[in-house]
Length: 105
Picture 1 (cartoon, rainbow, N blue to C red):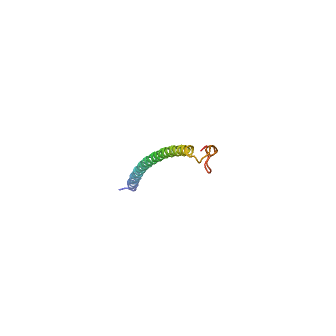
Picture 2: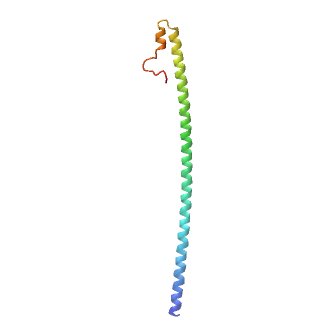
């Protein structure tokens, strides 16, 4: 076998090895990109779930605040009725806001 034939065979083998390595690297890169896509989708799902829970908590909080406001109004109405019925409370006491409470709140 001549030296030229050996060199050609070595070059062909080297090119085949380099091609195989390039193909393997490309497949690995594609696999990593796909894994990142899956991870990103999972993270998005988690974010949507968290946002949904936060919205539910916000709505529950607003509902609870509304219930508390109505209860406070009912308590104020009862207190006013009690003051109107109480013979020991004068008309001036009815018109004055109670201490520590903001009548506009």
